[in-house]
Amino acid sequence: MAIKKNFRSDNTYMIVADDGDNPKLGAKVLSDGRESLFLDYYFGYQKSVNEETGKEVVRVDRKRESLSLYLWQSPRTPMERQQNKDTLELAKKIRYERSQQLLEDTEGYRLKKKNNQINFLDYFQSYIDRYTKKDIRVMEMALRDFRNFVQDTPEYKRFVNFLKPSALTQQMVKDFVEYLQANHNGEGAKTTYARFKKVVLYAVDNDVIIKNPCKGISVEIDVNRMAKDVLSNDEIATLLATNVPNQNLEIRRAFILSLYCGIRWCDVKDLTFGNVDYSNGFLKFEQSKTKGHSSKSGVAIPLNEDLLKLIGEPKTDNPKEEKLFELPSHTMCLKSLRRWVAKAKINKHITWHCARHSFATNILSNGANVKVVADLLGHSSLTYTERYVRAVDEQKRAAINSMPKLNL
Image (tube, rainbow, N blue to C red; front, side, top):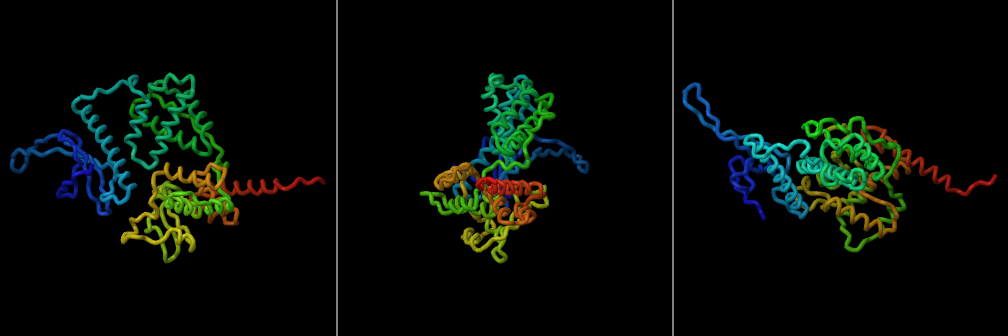
């Protein structure tokens, strides 16, 4: 159902809601075609005396909170409409939680629970419901992994529906870390545990957990080991020669660009024609993962004629806003990719991030300088890039060892 937009003088409108809502959810129209969501709080009236006239002045006491959530003002694609729907649903959950907190603080309607009445599993989910950063999928995966750990571990199975914060002990966390290491490859365990710790530290800061059970516990991984599968040049050629009936061509084109430029999923999905420098043949963008905290977040990748042809030309008069690829969700892209890999009879577990690993490994195998590869990948240090060098060295050693044995 479309929202009725009754615009006010400050270019804002309120999302349709009950008159009794406090705070109320609203949106402000921005010049870039988006709408910024906010909450307006009402705290009643404040009385004061004008010092010059001596008269009593009454004013409304209000406060506005920006949610840092955005809607497309005029969504043009199914993906943009779905993004609006998901964002609005999240904003409504945040508004409800804020309203409950306001009642608790001002009226005492919602009684604070004692710690032994709090379910840490629900607390974790509540944290995710309010979470607005881009790594929310990893945060959801952390809760899913923790629930699975509790379910799969006999001594903790009694906590599958209710886990008191006090029951989250150091030993339980150690066992969870071992579970993650056994069920994840590469840096997956470390990444998941980092999100789990984030929620635990939040609970500690808010006196839900008295003592940090994660203190002194870390995930150890072999930083030199390349855990993800990579596609060789021959396998890439096989993949490009393979056609899948009714294949989503946007997904196909986007993955090929990732293979040939080493681009992450989180970046390729947001690329616009404004990132393409046609006159000089470059693709320029800021990496989402390192933007704001790395001097190497900006990358400039040379584009040859084939890649420029793959990208194509903008179809609208606003290339800076027009996406290179209209992609569905990450899950749908992975499903399409796996069908494509299976059709090509490539017996490897290929995810979207494998494109980045394949790019680095293959161009190093072809003789590219490690510093050049680091610049193309946007690595702030050669430490990360040297993993690929070691992977190439291992491939060379395996190739030599594959020769017939000498009987001298």
